[in-house]
Length: 68
Image (cartoon, rainbow, N blue to C red; front, side, top):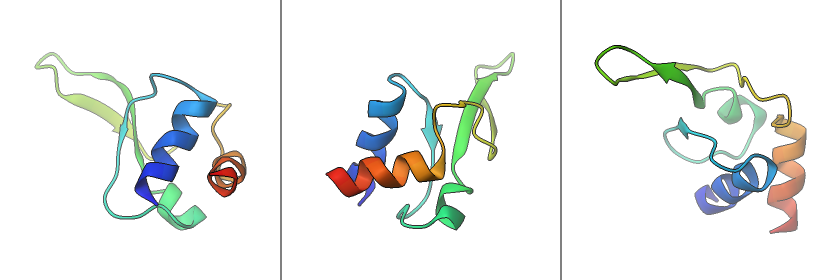
């Protein structure tokens, strides 16, 4: 399932950087993904759980995952 999620994200927006723990099977899981929004002065990832990419939504991710 992790491979399907990752592939779906890359299909919708290549080069998207994010991190997550566990499986992404529900919208609740999707809402826990840490989306990269930048880096601090030490190079550490700055992230948010609100996806900053309008082309990536749970419904679009789910549709792509269902195709795989």
